[in-house]
Length: 132
Image (cartoon, rainbow, N blue to C red; front, side, top):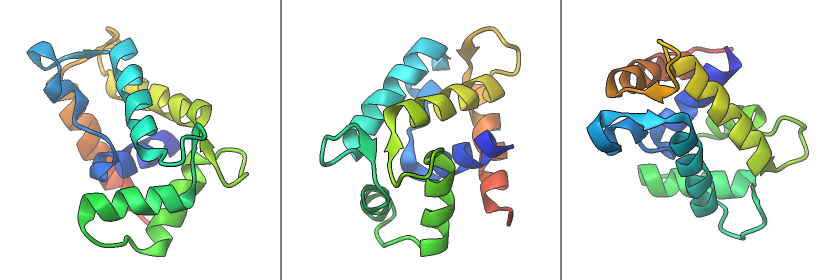
């Protein structure tokens, strides 16, 4: 369930409701991953190809209007930074985005409908709010 918790964190405001912004409320796996890469570039304020905990805090603060609790940031970041080196690289984040897409694609057709996205976000939010 690790990918759902990460998806929950992202659904809490670190990613857009992608399928809702796509034509006909659908988004392909390739487009979902491409949009994720573009979002990563927005979060990567020092343009080093990775997100640090500080960049994550800055993005969450901007999104929510105040600094998030340290325990939430630590939980999210630990899940994104697979190797524990203090950076969530593009490869690590893309891996999690691909896992999220695959988990949300209920009918396995390679396209997320707006309904699949909504259900995935709802499940992710619930998972993110559960204590580990």
